Image (cartoon, rainbow, N blue to C red; front, side, top):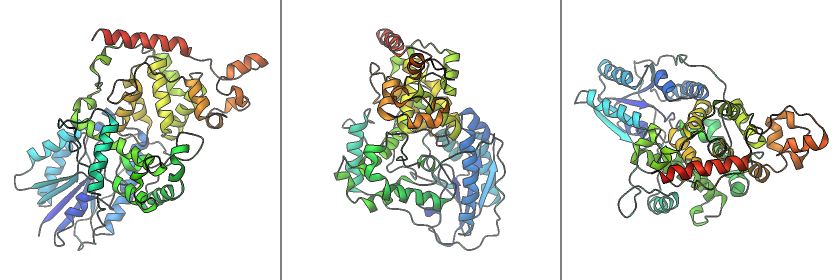
Length: 473
């Protein structure tokens, strides 16, 4: 009888899990699940306490789901990736494991870890890898020169051509196994700070209900309403995707049930949302094609010569939501209190840090990771480099968001601002984005900081810094 080990990583699900499904194909094989927590590694990569708490809660649920299939989920802790490989080698010897199944992770250190596993395993133990968290295998969507695309739209078009020709199937839930003598151990408390998270639940049925509800009730208006932070029109599925609680194939399955052939209607809400999933795919493919993106390097070389101000006081004001620009501060307070931020606001706050405060985008990238429940290296890096004009398919450096007009556009009456900045509750709609003008005109005192910089002056300084860096290249 063979013994198959399923190594769970960022694929914390039973449904549509190709590694698990493949391990269970041989009905006579014993199947063991394994999760190894690596707190020291997490700290080195700024993983948020909220995300770690969500992982812990989800593992408890996953262990129950696997137990119903007579598959024990073993839980272990190692300080780092290297030690975790030694743990797996020992476990394989202890349980006479013949085959190991896992879904790929694409970050540089994770790929290095997986290569180390193959080097350390006995030659008779086979490893089977799957692209369980993407629609397509990285480096299979290539341009005419057989290179990774540098711009999103051509990548999307090529991706869609391949996708429509071979629409992926969902991997079914495995049948229950014969009972094993191996018992699952308790999911122990993790050596990490504890912090509550909002918006996401570890229960898979509730997560899938949220997906179903979004596709049935909100997708139709997604294009028009997704950028308005006071409206609840985003999917709130990001943490499920980042940790593999739900797969992108499941997202597609639920979406296509409501909107068959939606890809033929590219102005529809359904296509707009699917386009976001392709952006996720794009960023994952990029870190495989360009591993240096995982090492705090910009995609555009010359942008590494920018002379940042990196004012620590300004950075602290940005982090705490005290810049004097209401839409920025409301967004940062939402992040700090919930571990999540609306996507449009991620772009605006990132632009403000880089283009108004002239602070290195990597400071913001790390801070977001330290707060987000849905932190994902590829997506976070891609988003920050887009906003900072240092990445592939980024906004040109001379296009700089005006935080006041951005607020006026996406939160015109200040509904979102008042939710997170109660000290501005009495400011009229007309002045909610410039509360100090109202205060000065009406002799009012408000407990809210003056703008940390004047946007027009900051914009000029940023343009000069970028232009000087480009000329020196």
